[in-house]
Picture 1 (cartoon, rainbow, N blue to C red):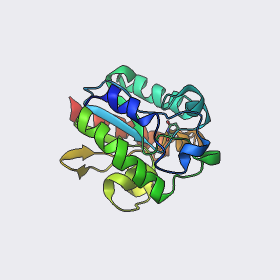
Picture 2 (picture 1 turned 90 degrees about the horizontal axis):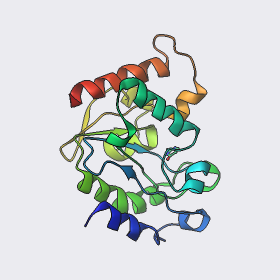
Picture 3 (picture 1 turned 60 degrees about the vertical axis):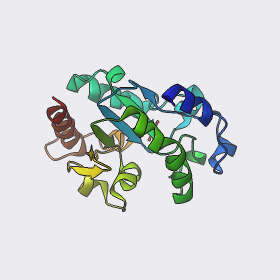
Picture 4 (picture 1 turned 120 degrees about the vertical axis):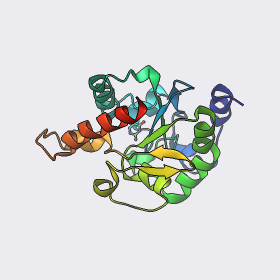
Length: 186
Ligand code: URA
């Protein structure tokens, strides 16, 4: 098994109701040997259109954060909890997240085998922490998932809604968080 094969298999997935509303499946992408993996919530409108994760406004901010930290996007692997766009960008329902992570995300993680996973936002963090924790509490802390280090950060869409860069602001904290991730990978 490899990522290309897994991606091909996912294209016809109909394991949950999200299959009905999607334009296409948005599988993860990036370096198949990445040491760092980002996991978002699910495709938005632009991702659904292009068939690639994090290519809309939130993705552009993620690109900027990575660039500012000196982490080339091509070096990391980027994926989502659910691979199909939820209607009107609603939060994925628990059964949708379960159907999708069990079939695809867990296998992506096994194949990439990253050293560090960064869940972006509360929905992704919940999967790795095994419980709902406010992202304001979870972010900036190290956890472990099946022997892999996990470091939740704010979702870039949340940063778009909170543009302040003042000390203690979500953007400022995210800047500190990405430095911490870099430090651990060096
Ligand atoms: N938000 C996400 O959580 N994932 C994407 O791929 C795009 C926006």
